[in-house]
Image (cartoon, rainbow, N blue to C red; front, top):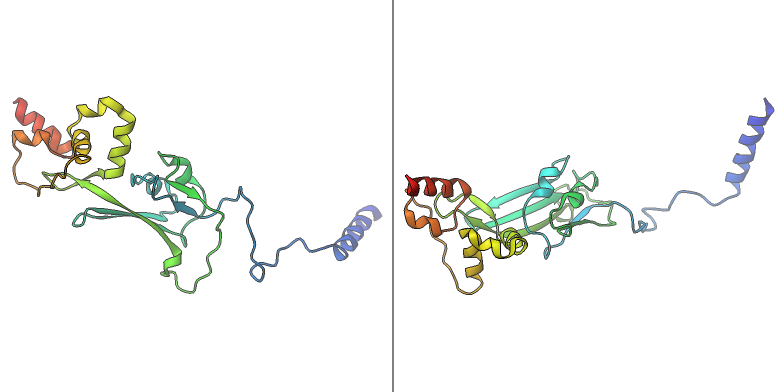
Length: 200
């Protein structure tokens, strides 16, 4: 009966004469350990703009903003909604496009402040027939490199390779499909329509 009370008294005295366990944050900045899972940060060189991170984000903290007029895709992280779960880093197809940093806290009075957001911008490839998004240029390049010589079987990858040597002006969407559209940068739906029309 007295033993638990003696243990409690011993612990109270030990705590009274020992250093505090808590940190002095925010008065003194706290450096998180290397393994700490903080806010995600994009690596512009390795991010290909595929949007996998946005698809797996459980809190919808990552949004994809497509600007078809300027052919730009923006991937934007809202740190105010981020739960620092690490799904985006784990599921990144390049394994380097997005990494968790040791930054874990944001101190702002306005949730629309620039430091609440992290973004990366990529150039998009649009279908030359219907104008829909095919993928980002970096994404097509990444797939082409992984496929090697097999990539030349697809006209989209062939055109990507051609752009490395010569400037190819993009055409505007058209109202009807023609046979010459086979050798154009088009989405899978339009390519299917072209093949079916050519065959039959």
